[in-house]
Length: 271
Ligand code: DGL
Image 1 (spheres, rainbow, N blue to C red):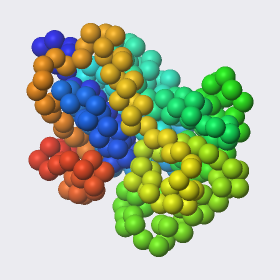
Image 2 (cartoon, helix red, strand yellow):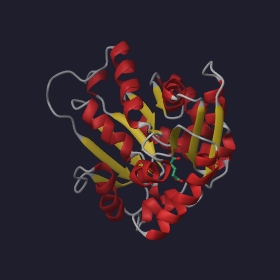
Image 3 (cartoon, helix red, strand yellow):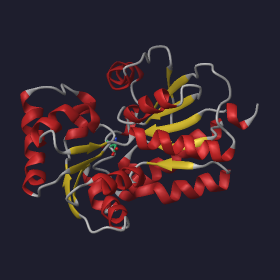
Image 4 (cartoon, rainbow, N blue to C red):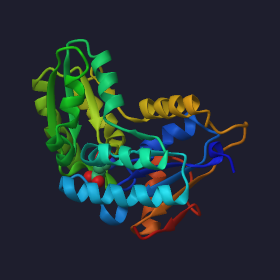
């Protein structure tokens, strides 16, 4: 089998990364994907950097061991804590690693009109300073307002997502962003695109929301093309799931995130 026929490995703490996978399936329809949802260890957003490095290394090892041509970290918390380590692991295995954070920071810095950029993310991602560093390196002065949301990803993953309580919570998180005059908000957690309509309503139509999906799909495309490893042919690729937690609930919640069928495509794995 040539390398171009191998799947692309993607992982997240659970279903959030499926918002990234969704864009990849649309932008790269001929590719095969192997997605590992670490739902048995969800949430990542309140874990220490050391715990996150251990989880990310174990999962990267699992996916590399199964034979993937690329690793995608579709989780901001894991990228912020372990991005550099996983890139090194990938290098040793000759497998490129694509992560979130950098691509969103680049888009936000480019499109912001008033230079006031907001970041809504998990406590682990905010504490890491990863977005602040990425935005600081973009070559233009930006005022960055970071808001840590400890309970948003768990609510989105476990539901119910769309009720008054969540609306109040989102309203509270938007308050400092509004006060700061934010015109561009990075959704710094791959779970958050599911509450994008709520955020847009609270912040107003003029505020641009930046999510990881498009940017990551474009980065994957560029990297594979430069290595001559894009899947050839016009056929529709396959997508499969490895799950460390309960498979049935992953399939049920995941279908909402991916908006494509998951049933019959997911198996349990111990990592
Ligand atoms: N989806 C993950 C992220 O992008 C975090 C969710 C969690 O496990 O807390 O940060």
